[in-house]
Length: 313
Ligand SMILES: [Zn+2]
Image (cartoon, rainbow, N blue to C red):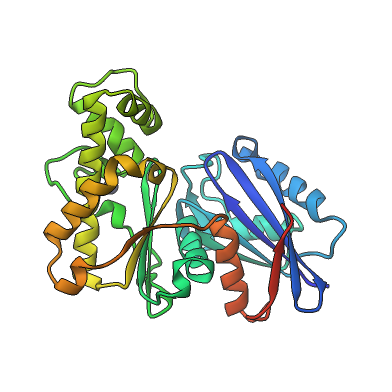
């Protein structure tokens, strides 16, 4: 029996998925959740994962989705915002030596999510789409002709850092005026404070609650977010003319406060008739990273493309 692991390193939790063949052509998926805070010591995480699959054979392949900067040539994780202690870490080597599996594939977290959307979401009907994960920051992935665009060094698709306002707000990346500085969760908080909102507000969820309670400054912060997001998407559509845009991530739960402005701004700045009519959809998928991992396993020929998959939660 072959087994596989798909590990999703998120900001608050690490989701570990174990895939195993229950019957021929049928894969079952078990899930285990580990707090990200406790993963500062990588050996503790490894031990936890080993306990999770100890009744099963050693995984054939482990796929790990992690945010941050990864040097694929040196197989080293340079930095990761979710686990600051994982710095200059030879991740593959550490996991193999820790007894997790024979082959480790490391993928940027949003790229893995984009592949998930390709496998199980809107990618089922679109071969060309842009995926945006809007949370505290903005991550994104670009799929052209059914393939993820990686760029020459693996860093392509950073739509969150396209320049939208040269003298504008400071971005999390240390530069000024990126899309992310306006159209992400942290961007919403920045706009709210810039407009004179309450100083102790820390998250876009708080701004959302204030907006729902009638705080006009909070409502305005979401309108600004929507407008910049629409402009940002228009810029990308003007270059790539995809079949559609997929929005995902925690901030999209506040769509009632920004969707209208986003669509208006998008239509205003799109160049072609075709582009203006590009559908902008909110992802319906859960467990993006899991499905992204399954997409990779299929492409690597590790599992059949028509396998049936059952989730056990
Ligand atoms: Zn930036």
